[in-house]
Image (cartoon, rainbow, N blue to C red):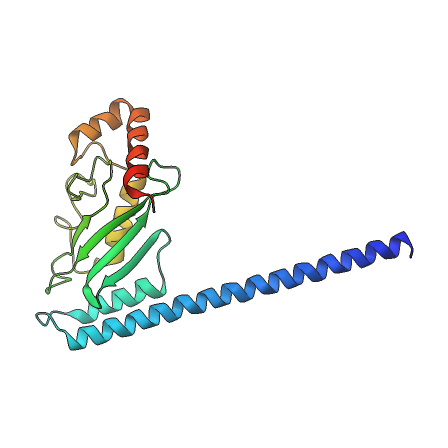
Length: 211
């Protein structure tokens, strides 16, 4: 067999293998997408059933159910949401620490409770994972760092949604505001010795937030 023919055969074999690998990857991606959609559909059916079977105060659940569907079918990167025991008014959320931050790699858990008069009243959101952050207290309360104009109190409006709240928190992890702190000592460290602040924040992330 000539060298030229051998090369052509080898190149053809490599191309066929690459095609098989790409086809396999596409099948896997499709299967993963279908599994994710099935899980979301099951969760939504359970939530819908719960909203009908277990009303709690007769609040406007339709809006909350629509928000939950949107979040589950179109999840935000870096954020996972599930509701507790088929109760759509009680969510457990996990926010991934932003890349290139001292929180990178951490899984930060939040507890979210929606009152019966939501969206006219904001949800109650609390970190349940310890975090070293100037805008988040040791008890898990937070300010979004907008000169005390907290999205969950001062500037809350019924047009805001739960996913906007979660995005606000994700932004807070990426860009703290030490000029409007909840934890003054942490804010002072951030402003005076950023390197030491980030070192401590990484240590807390490793200690409390690693999966």
